[in-house]
Length: 149
Length: 149
DNA sequence: ACAAATTATATCGCATGCGATATAATTATC
DNA sequence: GATAATTATATCGCATGCGATATAATTTGT
Image (cartoon, rainbow over all chains, first blue to last red; front, side, top):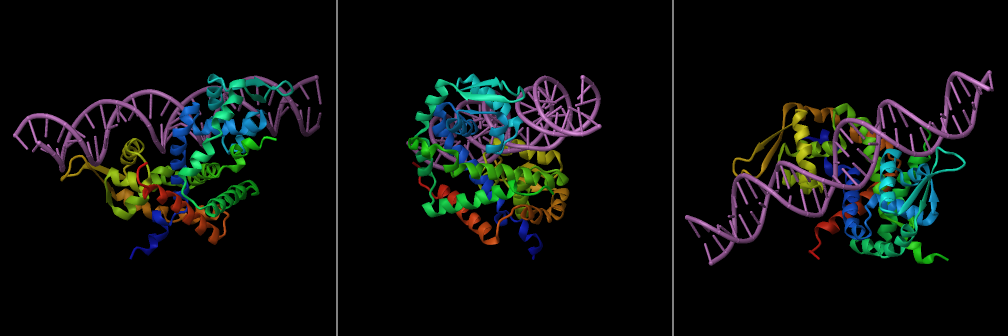
């Protein structure tokens, strides 16, 4: 009897399906985002900018739960692609002012069909998708609202 | 009114919290897995081998939803660390026979505390964790049982 | 005012993750 | 039984993702 190791079995991990689902979804997005010349991470950055038009790197890091060492090079690539402008904030020169270019703004219309395309590939009932969303945000928020250990 | 863009807002994406939760969890594991000299991906490979003692790369790819171009170099690192042996299968020389070394087998006992440590860091009620698990596997299985498009 | 602490970003090194492609071993086909 | 198709793994190039560390700008403390 190996019951001692039961909790170590792959099928008893909650984290593994989260990890596998994340990989799966990134793969699925690729097909649609290639047409926009965006990667998944670049896409979520653009999504924030389509709502804000202007942001600094710290804000993007917080909203997207990423670190600056991921975003700094990624923002440079978005700049090279002509989707964003990166300038120093006039008031506080430590801050980067990230703004959309005309091309970057126009890209939003091209992206309009992406959410539905992805939704069509995820075979969950609407209530299940909603429940998944709710629990995941609880998991993520549990992180933010935690006092330091 | 920007309702046209409503579906594109970050907060209306199901995929983003999956992605963010996956990153978060990998970060959390690091603290515990560093002591075992394992990364998260290496850890889940070891988890399969602790159950199987013997597997080939294709099997690992299927179980872990990864591609050979991720696993091939990773398996070499596990071999360098002395946790696994990689040999060619006698019967079919295309297959790699991945087996645990003595050290690799012993590592399982050191890993026994990891699941509980992680569970303590994830602030979900047991029913919510169970529901999350169920829905994620439905999402992942929906993938496998799909006929080609 | 000026040194110290803080803050925002940048850089480095390592470990994935994957599409595309290549190669070697086996199987299928005629 | 030679060739074609298939299968399992390997290699290449690119894009993250992060801990650790460095740097420049601002704020704090006195």
